[in-house]
Image (cartoon, rainbow, N blue to C red; front, side):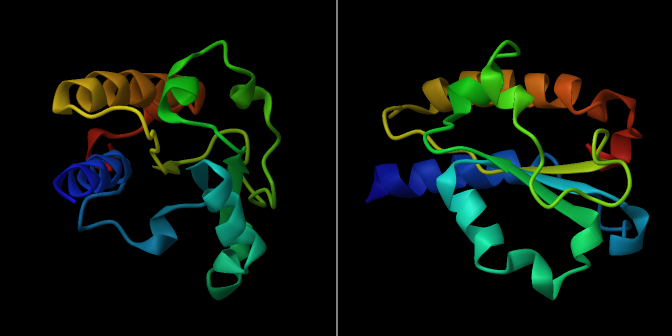
Length: 136
C-alpha cells in the first residue's frame, strides 16, 4: 500500500509540474495537451473534454506509453497525432498535463530521475521552454 501511494504521489508531482500558478485562469490558455497511457485516451473517449471547452483540449496517448518512452526524444510517441486537436496552437500547446505511469520502479530515486528526464523532453518537444516561468 505504501509503495502504491508513493507511485501516485510521483504521478501527481509530474502533473503539478505543468499546472499554472494560482493566478492563471482557464482563459489564459488556448491549448492544453494531455499526454499519457491508454487510460488517458479512455478519459477523452468517455467525454472528458465535453464538460470543458473542447476546442482548447487535446490528447496524445498510446497503450503502454510509460514514463521512459516519453523521456526519449527519439520515441515514436512524439509522432503521434493529437486526437481531438485544439482549434489553435495544436502543434504548440501552452499547457501540458502528463499522466506518469510505470509499474516496475520502486524507489524514489528511480521515479525522480526518470520523471526529470520525461519533463525535460516534454518541455523541449512541446515548446514549453518558451513559456513564462510562472507557467512551469
